[in-house]
Amino acid sequence: MARTASLSGFPEWLPEERLVEQHVLDTLRRTFELHGFSSIETRAVETVGQLLRKGEIDKEVYGLSRLQDDEGEAATDGGKGKHDPHALALHFDLTVPFARYVVENAGYLAFPFRRYQIQKVWRGERPQEGRAREFTQADIDVVGDGELPFRYDVEIALVIAEALGALPIPDFRLRINNRKLAEGFYRGIGLDDTAGVLRSIDKLEKIGPAKVAELLKTELGATDDQAQAALKLAGIRTEDTSFVGQVRSLGVSNELLEEGLDELEQVIEAAVKRAPGKVIADLSIARGLDYYTGTVVETVLVGHEQLGSICSGGRYDALASKGNRKFPGVGLSIGVTRLVSRILSQDLAKASRSVPTAVLVALNADDTWGEAQDVATQLRSRGIATEVAAKAEKFGKQIKFADRRGIPFVWFTDDEGKHQVKDIRSGVQVDADPATWTPSDEDLHVQVTGTSPE
Image (cartoon, rainbow, N blue to C red; front, side, top):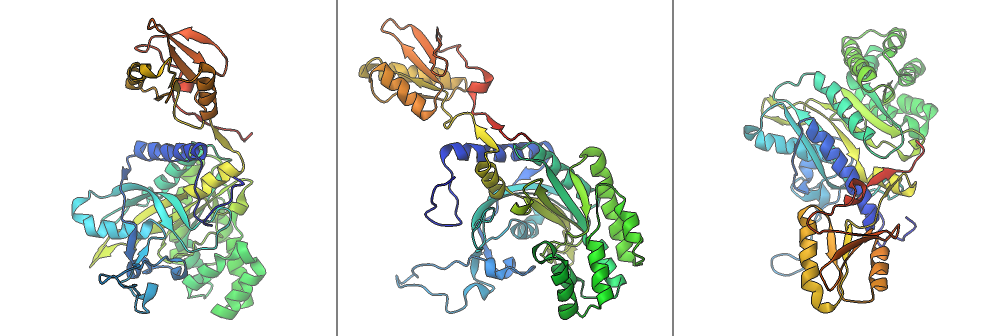
């Protein structure tokens, strides 16, 4: 992990590191599919107008331009750049492209539509630990046609808790709030620019309560009492449904507030039963993107909070629409690259070997290469990853080659056709039949195990 990157913000893993990443991806896929989510993949590019319909992150979008036009001359964008709504740009997340995908394919989808999507995304941010310019996200969403029962908000949180719980990572907490609760409270205290208040509250952990209060007063016209009331709400955190009483004790009355309180209570109540200790009600969570309308979630690793959120998302009721037809949805996105970077930098998990290969078939002589390939074919037919030595060097050199590659077993065949296999870690060598020999389950496939005491 001390390697120097040739291009900052675009991580590349060594083979043994990639095995850890693949383990994370495979675990997420398996969990998502067990819960009935179907895999899709969307194109890497969208129009700028599509990408920037909601939210305020245009400065992070990578616009696309061709190096040459059709006449072979250097191409320009005519000064339009990424602010031309018809220009193309790389997607910065998977939710906005998914909304477009749903609208375009609505006639072919069965609703509620459950999808998972694991792809690269790109953001023009300043690279730092946990924040890259090219990174992998793993999303799950459920989208309805016209309506989507709130129960899916509860289910999504539980699926993510299960998926994260299966990874070699430290303990984590899903910090959950509800936009309706927050917006209803702000309206109840007389702050009508609820989106502005949410954007200010979203900066709480970065700049602190005093500066957030100043923002509320200078930019949104809040009084001292209003600013302090908003901060009191944001200060409520509970591991159970006791937040309901704490919010009501602030003495604010609003219909939308009550609706949000009820929804958040349902999520936390279910999580306490089915994912105990993994979810907290945190009324400071706001999420900066404007398309969220209800449940909002951010997830932190316990003891690694400075890394930021490793999984976030929420409910959106109007992101996808076609005329009067609405496709409300709820979803969460796991920052796979951020997670894997922390796993590797903190040595939280290791692969049992650096290559998939379990067996190297050694050569007695160069003219036995064909017979060695026959042995390898028999082993591979039973799922044993096998490679054949390239030349007939001394057996000691072939064993050293296997050791250097991280291959645990070397296969030998003598002139009479008798087979033996050697575990080069223990030195034990035994007779073997290529039609029946199989290593232990632990050696058959690369194992990724956690090394953290947590």
